[in-house]
Length: 148
Image (cartoon, rainbow, N blue to C red):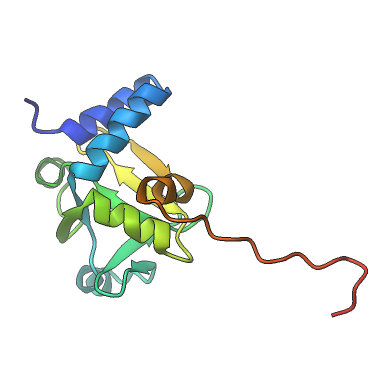
């Protein structure tokens, strides 16, 4: 067995982006421990972007499109050897999915690979579907002809 199963699934999906490879990646993510940057490390690094479930606060990033996503690191032991200390805690992927599903300002998860400089996004909608959470309702729209 490889020591980087989550990263291997991430790479497989990057090479062949289809439903089967994404399903394998998500299945492994849910059962894996992933690295996260906690509030203690964020203070040392001067970061302000956070997502919290009330007990744990983790770093987020606005990767690419400016939307706030929880930042995670696949296969933490190998990631540390390859890229150095970018995180200071490990938590279950299932917990991260719940944080992304429930976080009002969170738009999903960014998973950084331990073997290559690539990443994979998991949308908030995917996290909600996996956790059985109801999608957040959009605020009601105002009619354009009504005064405020």
